[in-house]
Structure formats: C-alpha cells, structure tokens
Image (cartoon, rainbow, N blue to C red):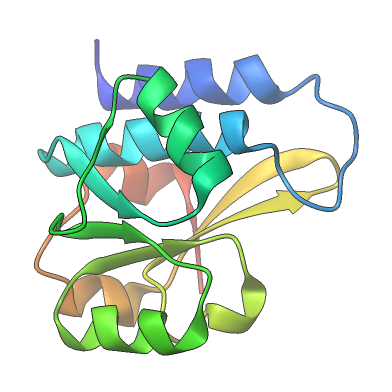
Amino acid sequence: MSYAKIFILAAAAVASLAVRAELAPEVEAKFLKAIIASSGTAKIACDDPALKGALEAQGIAVDSSAAICWVTNPNIAKTMKQFGRLVITNRRDLASSASVLILEDNGRPKLILNTANLKSAKVQLSDAVLKIAEKM
C-alpha cells in the first residue's frame, strides 16, 4: 500500500472525531505510524505513557535510541534537534525545534512540516508525506 493511501486512510478514519483541544493518542499514533513507515524506520522514541500505549497497540516499536522522536518538552526538543533526530510534537510552542507538528484544526488532524528542521534531520520523509502536509 502506498504512503499516500496510508495517509488518506488515516485521515478518513479520524475525520469524524468530535472537536477537541488536542487529538486523542490513538489518532496521533495513526499519523505517527504513517510517518514512521514513510521514513523507512520501524521505531520511535516516546516518553508520553498514553501515546506509548497507543503506539504499541499500532504495532510500532518504542525505543529511546530511535532516529524519530515524539517530544513535548522544550529542552528535550532542542537537544534532539541538535542530534539530528526527526522531532515530532503536538505543541505549537515547539515549532522552532520540531520537524513535524500534528495538530488539531477545527476537529481534524493537521500535519505541518518545518522544512528547515526537516532538512537537518538525519531521517527523511517520503514525497507522499511532503505533498500532503502544510509547510511552515
């Protein structure tokens, strides 16, 4: 299955969600699964217990040494960026350190890429992800 189809299926699966301040961990996990698959890696670093459970339920390996990391702490985000990791977050205030933001926009998930940070990350995403995401 192509990466574009995976993203379309993930978006369709969550399109009917009620409006929330934040996306549910299960929704974030679906997007992370597609991002991880598009990068050619099979694992992610994550210290958020709720999201970690959702990732493991999706069959994603959680490993602190992974090149892709889910971050919610500003200090950790800056450190991971300096090490060339692909930093993903759901917090707008971490946009300067993150490569990918997964946000809620009018009840729907929205993928935003920080192209400058994406270029400096050691992990690159597929063209399918680059095409569907909004750039900042």
